[in-house]
Length: 69
Image (tube, rainbow, N blue to C red):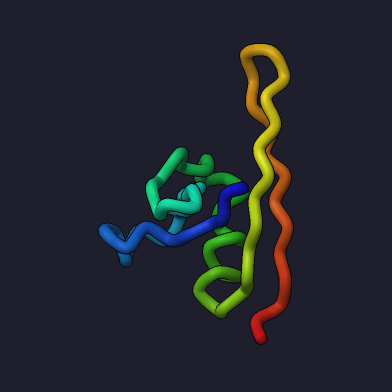
């Protein structure tokens, strides 16, 4: 199970969202096209969960979002 995180090393990179594992290590960076909306949601406290499924040589990522508490 992974979660989404903004890149703390690049706070001004508005189109950067990372997939982070339970140990807090970045596993991948999500491409910038769909990230603008995700970045805005994360910046406003939205909770996230990402599930990764491997199908052959490709990875599929399902992203689940919840409103901030």
